[in-house]
Length: 272
Ligand SMILES: [Mg+2]
Image 1 (spheres, rainbow, N blue to C red):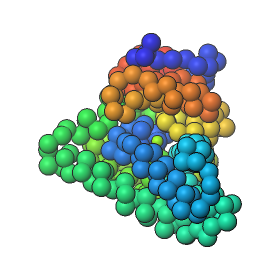
Image 2: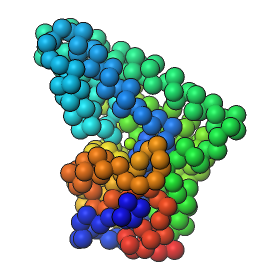
Image 3: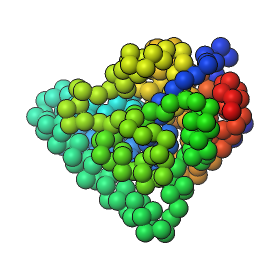
Image 4: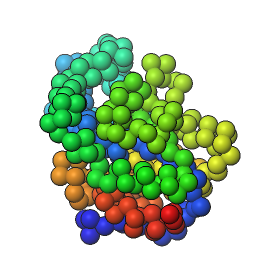
């Protein structure tokens, strides 16, 4: 069970598909795995400093809820919510951008080290990807689909890390990520841009993601949503917590990774 393809919605859209949109972190890349374990404690710490008398446990629960709900949107939105929570407790928040920078500073220590081990050849790039990513991408392209990448992580990092993982060639210029001017990008905006500019319809789109946002947005336009509930440390098996949340968000199909990419593609009617 844990290695198989789980059909959640028996009436999932079955194409013919013309384009696929991938989230990046947790959907293709493992370079930033564990980011939640950096973001959540940082936010709890900040809320504790405001001097509210809530327990660490209840603050952790509160923060986990909104961080999860906003996963897939640009990081700044999680920081905007943090600032709002500070205000609600009578504190004076920093600019959300300052919170984002502090989060990135803390996260970067681990990320930088992983990047270095790939760059200096100590670790194969493939080991920092969701299993089967390369094969899945190649088969989608061979089947005539156009691929897009859309991430909530800052665009320059996304481009670097995508290339480091050797997954960039099939995406070309179609790589999108968080912008300083954050109102200029969202996954919803990208989906609408694809529909408007390429003539691809919503039901001809496949979305791959491990966050709420990409699943909800792809369902909103009638596309097929594939939830990637990967155990990011084992690289095998389903993370049950992610699975539950992806199903809540509306995922049609759940996969642990793309090891069974051929079976997955034949299930959804993408033929070579
Ligand atoms: Mg993700």
